[in-house]
Length: 623
Image 1 (tube, rainbow, N blue to C red):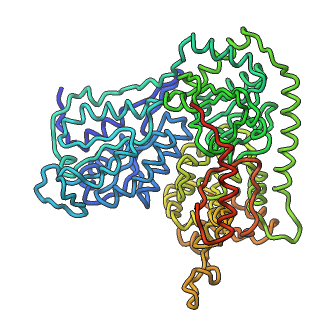
Image 2: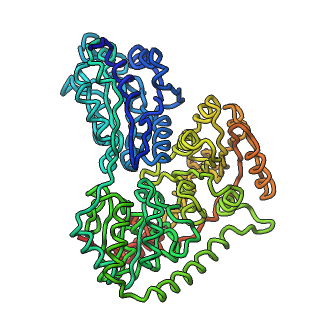
Image 3: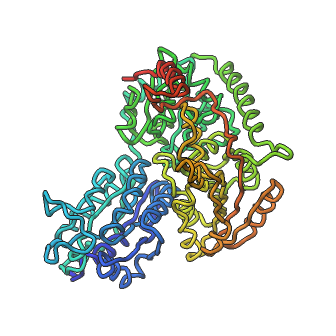
């Protein structure tokens, strides 16, 4: 039987019938569609969503970039098994989503983007908001999505949906290939009718695979692990996405191997687990970084091994160090010259544990456990020292983190993204649940925090969600407070005000340059520089104007009281706290490669360059 529908109606009906299944659990892939309507989608996708609102729930965002962040955060909390679609108009509405697309693809998280596009027929060419490219009439601003999408297609004819939609869904549900998927929808094509077989709209279940590496490679890897003297595991986001926390616990405990954490992998093991040595790399702690320095075998589980994790490839100084990469994505499994185990983290760890124990461990596990305990005690004492409150002193970011951590329950979620706070959270936040720590640091995107927090809350409404955001990031994208209020989703937003981009200011000054351009200050007439007094912003009134409750806290006691009030509230509540602009959480033997000017008239820059040239000698080439 054939059904006559528009291309947009076909998209909505098809998406509503898609499901994922893993380990016998089946669920809808798309829980709804975010959208902001304009002339490029209101009469196409918008009409279809209204007509079929019983099939796919529509959510109205305030900003196109933000709605992608919300969808991605939801997908992350759902271990990539559920997500949203997002639709925009042509022109600026579409390009606003490009940043969100890049974030999704960098973080390996699924989201479907449906930007409106210029007329396929070209009859009214050039259409409103069209950017004309003189070299071709086949180019629109949506071509900007191509490098940041895992799959991109432009639908010139409704019949192309028969091939484009299944391919888009294949990529979205493939744990190795997933990321942003973009189907550019010309506004005239959205409204065109065509005949569709009824079976096209039937329920389809996408079985999310758990691939296993070949047995012979597992055996070889097991021999390396059994024979290693100083092994270390780096646990990334893939551990959590594959529900491998229990398998990692068993593997580390039975094989006697310390486990370090990345931003995406933090929480895979509780912070006080006997083999958890905490964060590693540029924002890592002394326990993990000291073990990494001497490790002779590094087992990377579900991590991209980005520069913050590897201290820009300076973390591993043992000349004989080898790597094993466990990842569903071949690209990631091969990094650092690793022996690659291309497979699901849970399946691979279970298989490796059996083979390692059969092979027989030669190292002294008791001695390694004692070393781990000593380092854990040292690291925990350093964390405690940062979190302790000093009488009559200005509140520091570390103390704010400690107070929020203490006020939250183990099942609650902290959300953050960019600036200095993610590094501070990685070091100082004590996580007990695999979903209790949600920090976007693959793209480190300012503005993610509140929109991401909304996605987290929508995914897990029974948990309190604490959004930690700096004033700089808040000013970039805070309007999803309105969406949270509109949808009745409660967030606790902790706005930490240090008057600008103090993280980058600190990096700037540590690199030998004077403070320049990063603080929120007035311009001085006499110098024409941004060196005047701090610009006052009433964040409390701002949040209240958007529909939230807002509380200003000026002392630790007031802050703790505000947290309790926020927990008792039923609506989104913002807590404003000003912190010391000069006090930062120290570096704990990590390093990050940020090049310093090779020549400069400033002595401080020349000195910083000399230190930099010493530091880069620690970088190693792994092939």
